[in-house]
Length: 310
Image (cartoon, rainbow, N blue to C red; front, side, top):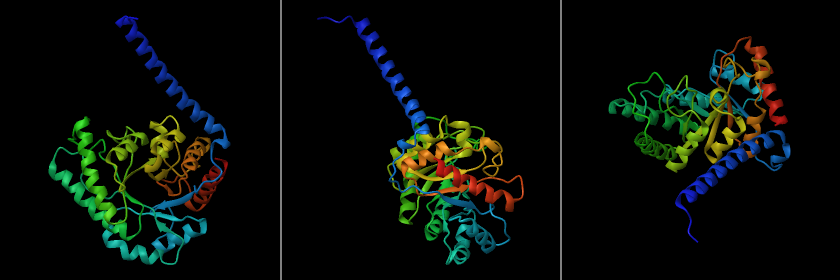
């Protein structure tokens, strides 16, 4: 039997289209189904909501005052800035001594950017990241957060496959250094208003997969995900085994969760985290519109209630 080439191509293309559409439909369907079906989440899971505060989140003049406040709320993670971290290791260790609080991720603090066209600026980024990675490991941090490039950082390498390959090479080196010091480096996708490269969790996870280095991981940020992701749950699931950290903020003004009313719904995202058995940190990265002593306890309660509902 002879097959007409035109009909063969037509049938092949239509079949491929059907497969693509069915795959897309299945992904959307599974997202919607799991979002509405608690049975889609395994009962036996190690997932837990470990809340973390950045240094400026809790009220208090000193680290000890901040940690005292955090302990009263049951906050178990502390996310310091990476700037000057090497000189603060002793201070942070002393303030954490005897407390049920650990260092979660380290929030940036490096200089330069890895996607610069200038080799000197790229080297500055690599060198200053390594300067942060060393004390991050000493503090038992889960990783050092890095953004490959912000919108204002120019001139930058073009958005090509060659640039992606270069990024993988650089982060393989950085990740290996991180593993040697007992920590990781964490890609953070940002929304398009802030970054020109790396906007979705799946993109970050795919780079982690291709690098295939235990020292290179990624994260999701509810604030950026609000603008860039169609499904919180799907975004976290796309991070899979590479998901190392989560940031949270209100979804309209990047304020405390709960300060934007009904818009501040994190249940579907929490369902995704539960499905992954996520047991790392969900850390506040946000401002505050009201009195922190009133807003923060209400915000923490909101997240815990939504975690239970997820």
